[in-house]
Image (cartoon, rainbow, N blue to C red; front, side, top):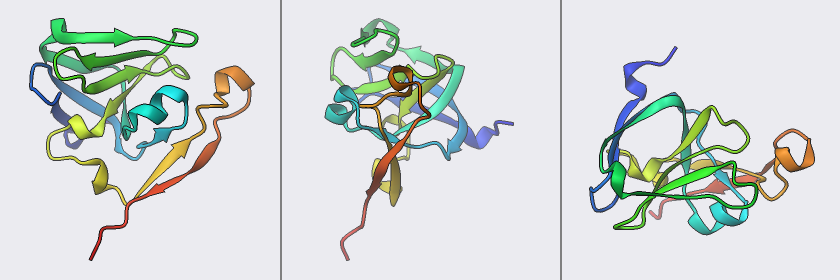
Length: 141
């Protein structure tokens, strides 16, 4: 069951796009990915189920990008360029949301972030998703 603690407000950098999201399991599913696009983007994401994101303002400012198989749809603000979320390739019923866009959340809030092997994607290999490693943030003293 999803609690109200999992409901968050978010926006892009310039504020043109504002949204509300209900995270499926809070921050238990945070991750990064090694695929070519995610590697360059560098975002930490958390999951929301289909219908779990409501665009409150700026839907017309959202731009979509698809690559490779075209099944994952990535959304970003056409004004400031910030990636807000994407529909996942491996589970089309889930969206991955950029945690840096959520009010009061920073990717540096998480001391460890699992990194998934997107280069050898489960939809390409037929094998279970493999964890490629762990990204660690160690604050300076």
